[in-house]
Amino acid sequence: MTKIKILAFLLVFAAAVNAQKADTEVKKFKIPVPKSEYFNAIKKYNIVIQSNNRWDKSREYLPNETFQKNITIDRYKNDKQIDSINPDLKILVGLSQIKYIINSMGQPNVSGDLSYLILGKNNEIIAMNSVSKSMPLDRVKGRSQETEMANALCLQAYGVLDELLITTNEVELTFNYGVFEKCEAVPKLVDFNTKTQELLTKLQALTFEDVYLDEMQNFYKGYIGKQFGKIKEKDLNKVIYLNLSLIEIFKLNLPKANEYLAVAKEAAGFLSMWPDNAKKNLQRLEFVNQTNFGHKIETITSRSAYFVTLKGTAYYKKKVFTGTFEFTRFKPASTGSSGMMSLDSYSPTITIYESADAKGFDWPNGNQFNVKTEDGKEIFFKKYKGEAIMVVKNADGTFKPYESISDDVYTSPDDEKLELKKA
Image 1 (cartoon, rainbow, N blue to C red):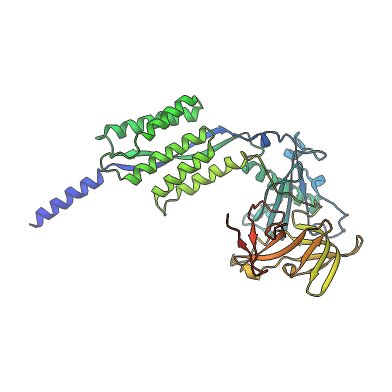
Image 2: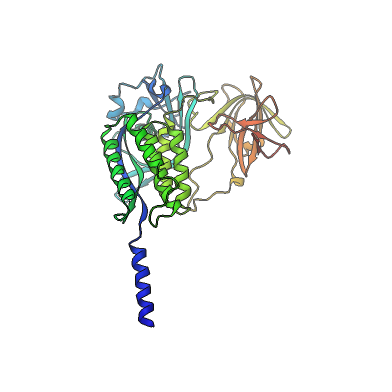
């Protein structure tokens, strides 16, 4: 009896080992970057290096001073697309929470919060972010700290523009696709794999016509809802819809590619990591295929990478201030050794300038101020999910984030906390 049980177990095990399986694999593709008319029209750009503190302690900064004049790196000096007068795009970049360190190789580094704004010709916001960053300093005897920092931040600006594909016309991306394993006994699955390899070869060589892609889509769709060997329906769908998503990418139908990817991800299961990687690549392509940017930076200064600037009247409890106000634009990205920070504990700083020649004074609790600007805008700080957000009041009493890429609209029933307005 024991031998029979062992034999039965081995037969079941062998069947499981030899059963057909659906699998995902990756392949690199070097492709021309497809861009919208908006991004194709960007021929000239400017890199603006900003500071919120003195890098050279021996002197004060001049009013409205920026530091791209200090850049000495070859890429910038030889870049014929740089235009400081009338650029199609500009990137404002700065570094705060600065720490100078020597890395394990004995090289000087600087770390802190790298913040940037990428703006179009009319100051429309294309991208904005603040990230914790460590970068090397090219230290040369006799070179000023201003030049060291300007060079380091210039390289970071180029890195951001390249990563977002703004200054890149060709890119190598890794895409996922689906195949079947141990399927020799199922001719339809063998045919699936054969045609998939043919497709990958054509996509890599960029030797395909739209009609061929249409044929391959119809081929894959012919497998939907069918039963092949031991393949489960969800695994079949994972492979089919992943390949359909890949085809839509090369057809430049990115919304449809996302739709198919979502179906493949659902079939893949919660713990699968590849859908996130696939999504990131799609997001990069989607970014440079945008056509409209509906939010602007209202006031550009030499410190806009760090601060939102408002002119008007500020109110704090019973105090009233008239002048110019700078509010910290980004919450800290560098949060110390724990890497954690309570959103409730963060409040932006406000710097108040009550006259043009007055030295500003700082208040740490900027989220308790509200401002009425010279042109009538009402600016508040209100909390959404524990985070203080700078918002402007709309004519209908709702609120929207101020100088942000967000399209969210909020209500504030208790006049303190925000609730996302339902569509």
